[in-house]
Length: 491
Image (cartoon, rainbow, N blue to C red; front, side, top):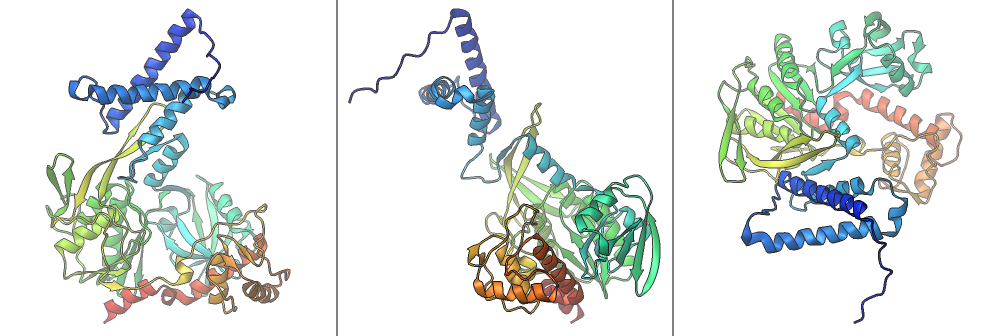
């Protein structure tokens, strides 16, 4: 077969050729170093691997040269050296054996860091908008300004400073509250039919731990494992115990993990000092056991119920394993099977703000059990309701309306919500059927909206508001997993 003829590459002047060679050498050197960091050390000095290593580097050098000098689109690309290196690193960390080893761009690294930090700015509540526009408080985060002021789950916020909640969109209210960071803000709150005035000062708070009483049970909702989670969890337990909690419910649903150090602190509030929490198995086969810390006082409960689902992962599963292995008769898992992430990662940041997260060990429960790709099965299986489990993406002004006889990711939520509210949508998937469109027309008519049978931003937001009121009115009964925990506790 004849080679394909192609123009000869332009000759590079001697001085430019030296620069080109130096740059190429630097790029290859950097990539060799990154191979080493990623656990894929290229043994340049080992004679037994020289042939393979040289061939691999030669192939890389050839591809690098082709893309940098002969690739048609290179003429329009800025900073090809940097782009090729970034692309190569991303490829090296896309290993099919390990989906949890990742290279993060600057934006991704910042987002990942923020997700672990657990910080937010505001007054420290989660809420649902009620049908009359009030803010129904669901959770109050430990040590937030709302917590310190005495705001409680179940309160209804009617007014924020000079803005009525009923006349202000949710997004605008949140932005308005944040704009008062560091300044006093007045809230008008309804509680048990009485109107109360609170003055709070929005600021930074940790969003990972909230607590409330459910009859004789203390409920702690743990959304992540941040640096502050352990201290907040310990404070929540002490508070619940002082309020008479006999049993403890820990809600780990959709908690995808975080810092193992936070899991250790949390376990230390429930298990005796020096109790094994988890084991680490390194790549060389060595093992190390981590025990509870003596810095936390233990709080004792008659029974512990853990709520879990398929998004309960990593540090959440470490906590489950620690409690289950050490207190098998005192811990009940309720919900569905957990994710099954039994590996441990660490992060290394680079000077340009990018970072790599890579697996360094497999962790095991105190009894030596690996749950990687297996997870924890529930002791009592309870499926979440469709209303709770379906997700959606907020619609913007320029988001196209969902038309009948079309497919849209939000169509599943629309149809499930319509059915929950008593409107006869005939499907629950992403296909928005003509029958569901007719059901939507009934909803639009009842709400005083334009009757189109299509889902625009106004209709979608009204549907979200109505389903929020539905869930609030249903109370604990609208959450079958939590309801089962309360039922078991009472029995």
